[in-house]
Length: 377
Image (cartoon, rainbow, N blue to C red; front, side, top):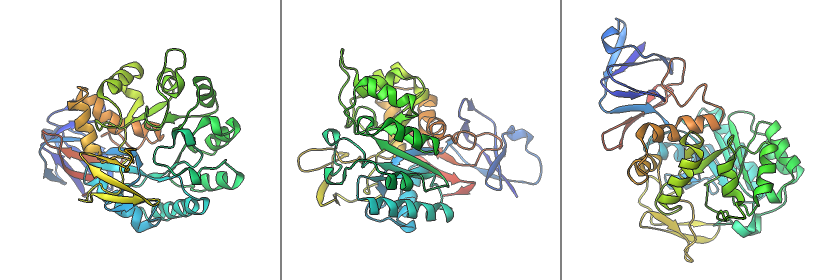
C-alpha cells in the first residue's frame, strides 16, 4: 500500500517545495507528485511543518544512558540509536573510543550482529582511536593507545556490511596502513592528532577522507604552521565534522571554517555521550567522572568529554548562532554526511528511489516525527 505524506513543506536535499506530497511504498520514496495530482489507491497522511531528509550523525558515543564502550551488544546499539532518533537522527555510526584490542573486537562483532538484525538507523561503526596522539588525547585514556598491528587491521576491516570509519593520527601511523584501510573500504579520518600540514596532506594522498571534530584535539592553525586545521581547509576533497554546541569551538571559528571550505564539505556531528535522551548529570568513563553542566560534559579538570548535544540542537545552533541558511544546514545534517559515507545514492535526499528516511520539523526546528525506511517513529 502506498502512503502519501501531505500538507508539509518539503526540503528535498536541494530545494524547498510547496504543494507536493511524498509517496512511500516498501520503505522507499516512489514519487513527489503535486498533492492535487495524487491518484486513487494512495493512503494519505496529513503532516504539518517541514519534511526533510533524516539527519545522519557519524560520531555518536552513546545515548539513552548507554555508552558504546560499556555496552558492546546489539541491545546497547539499539538503545543508542533509539535515543538519537527522538532528535531527528535516522542514520548514525555508534562510536567506540580508545580501548583494549579485545574490547574493540567485541564492538565490531556487536555491530556486525546489529547490522544483521537491521537495527533501525544503524549504518556502521566509528572506531575513534586507539591509534591517536597522546599529545592530543582529550578524554581518551593514553594507557590504551598503541601502534597499529596486523591484528588491528584485521579487526578494522572485518565488518563487511555497513560502513567502518576509523579516526587516527596520521603522524603515528604508516601511510601504507592508511592506504590499506582505504583499499579495504574503510573511511579514514584524522583526529586527536599533532601532525604538521605536510604529513596530513601526504595522508590525503594515501586515502585520508576527512577530519574528526575539526579544531578539537588538534593544534590551532598558525601563519607558518597551518597544521591539521589548515590542511583540512586547504584540501578540497575531504570532509570535516563540526560540533556546533557553543562549547567545543567558537562560533566565529566555525563561520570562518565553513566560509573557507564551503558548507558542502562540512557535516554536523554530535560526539554525544550516554546522557542524550536522559536526565543524567554525571557518568563514568574508564574510571573518570564526567559531569553534565550548562550544556557541556567535562572531567574534574575541565577537559571536554564528548558533548551534551543532539542533531536537532546542532541544526538549530547552526541557524541561530552561526546565521547559516537553513538549506545549507539541512544538507550539513544529511546529504553531506551521506556523501562522506558514500551513501548519497540512497540517503540524504527526498527523491524517487531513495530510502524513506525523513524528519518532520516544526517552525522552531523541533522534531515532530521521524521515518526510517518508511516506518514512522
